Length: 321
Image (cartoon, rainbow, N blue to C red; front, top):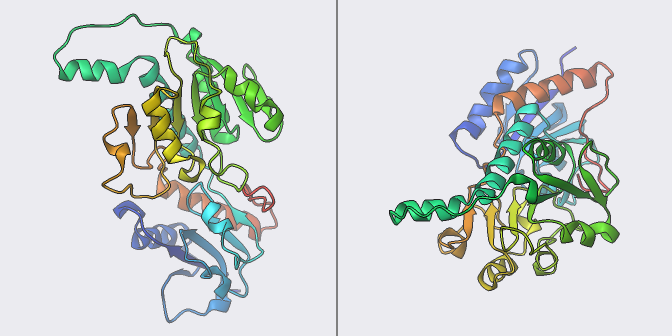
């Protein structure tokens, strides 16, 4: 019996993430399964059992009456969850080791850059100024990680290994060896008060939208060698109130930020984030995982599902992640 077809609905991306490149990948890892790259006028919507998607248009997935599973090719599912016509089938998030390790690399890199005063040292280099400042040890800096899923827990562990004082905050209870974990709204203030560098890896949900705002920044610890707290956001752009971030950088509520995500992407050329002296900016590439690994991951999940196995990393519609 013919296997159910896999539809690819992919919009945007670099050359390596192009729709044609994804078609080639899935043809290789699903050699005995029809793989349809949409739009394709010749395909039968009823033959589609699986969909691998990246930024599909609202309503596109509702066209498949026999859809069984949706695989999101990126980590964030907030755009999909906002589609009121999304079929009531399992939605699977990408979770591969490569993505986790790349996110940890990004978090560790940016924590270390702020900790080791890299903005000052690079400015000194440009000015040909040999004027090193005293450097404090990692053990006096408290890093707080918001979001203790796979990505957050791994990054927290790596920072702990480097000697930082690490705590974490999540909506529900978590236990991680060596990490002081806080949870829920009632423990958020205590978490913030002890945090010098705030790392945000939360999913974007109605509860977390604009959670990175002046009210949160004002509660961060101000009694550290950094002099003013630092924000690192590699989660989703919708988590941050960008006007608050800019104002807090200007008035000293925040000392510096590293931002990988923005409300509007690509970031407009007239955005003040491009040139602000206290901003380290990256183009949403903190955990741009290997697409080849993602295609293999999806193929393995489909095979396991058809053999009666359980899907991994299924999104909980109530939580939104």
